[in-house]
Image (cartoon, rainbow, N blue to C red):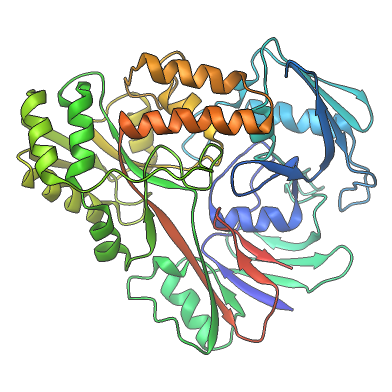
Length: 456
C-alpha cells in the first residue's frame, strides 16, 4: 500500500471542473481525460484513442479506446461522453461562476454516430477542441450519488469527502490510501514519522523546505500564472506605456527569492513556458526601474493607484501585494492596498470589473486558447477581460483560432504570445514551483507541470 497526504480530498460532481492540484491528482488516478495534455500544449490519446478532422478543421471525429469500461463494469459509450459533455457545458466553477465551455461550443453540434464515435461539427475551424477535451475527465455517479466511477487505472473502493479515500488498481499496481491533511507542515511531519509515504504541495510550508536527504524530492514549475489584472478601461493603465512600465518596475526574481525561497519561474507573457505557442522561449520583461520611470513620465495620468488583493489564491497574496506596492512606489506611484477577505466574492468582483487599478489573480488554464479567449480577446469581452484593446493582438488571436495543423497552431499562438510580451495587458509575475517528498525506497513517483503527483 502507498499512503499519500494531500491538501484537499474530494471527487467533485461530474459537472464540476477544477484546477486544484490535489483534486486533479485523485482524478487522474480514477478517471481518464478525453485527451491527455502534454507539456508544450499538444495532446495524446486517453479515453479517445484516436481522432481525425476535415481539411478545414470544422469537423472532428473521436474514437473511444476499445474496451473502455467504468469501474462498475458498464461499457463506456459515446452516449456517456455526450451526457458528460452536456453536464460540463452547464457547469459552474468553485466560485459559482459559469465556465466558458458553453461559449466555446455554442455553435457546435456534438453527436454520436456510433457507440464508440463522437462527432463535433462547428461552423468555424475548431482545432482548439483538443485543448478543451483535455480538461474533461469523464465519470459517472455510483448508487450513493458520488461521482467516483471512472475508466482510469484505479477504482475508488472507499471515499469520505475531506477525510480519506482508498483506491485499488484495476489490473496491477499498489493499493493507494489517501489522507486529507490541509496544513503543509503537518503533511511533512506525517512523512517524517512514517505515517504517510508521500506528501504533496510542500512548497506551501511557512518554514523553508529543508530537502532532507533521507527522502526523495520532486519539483516542477507549474503552468499556473500569478499575475495582476490591470484595469485597461479607466485610469493609468489605459496607457500601453504605463502597463509596460509596471512590468519593468517589479524585480520578479527577487520576489521569488524573498517570498518563495527561489521556487518559481519568471513569467514573460500570459501563459507559462509549457503552453502551446511557447516552443520558442520568450524572455521575461527585464527589471529596469529607470525605464519604468521614463515610461510613466511619458504616460502621464494619475499618480495614485489602488491595488486589490485577497488573502489567498494565489498563495501568499498579501506578501506579494506588499512587495509589488513597494516596487511601484519606488518608481513614483502612490499605491493604496485594498484587502478583500471573502475570496469567492473577490473573484466575482473582478469578474464584474470591480478591480481598482490592479488586482492580483492566478490564471490556471493549461490551454493557450482558453487564456486568450477568456481574458485577452477584445472581440469576446468575456468575463475576465479587463478592457485591453489592441487590434494587432485581436488579429493574431483570430488567426491562431483558425489554424488547424499542430505546427500551424504553435506558430500562430507563438506570434500572439510574443505580441503580448511587447504590449502586456497584465503585470506578469511568476509561475510557482510545486514540491513533493516521499520515502526514498518508493519508485515510480513524479510530478508534472500541472502539479499532479504521478504514480506508476
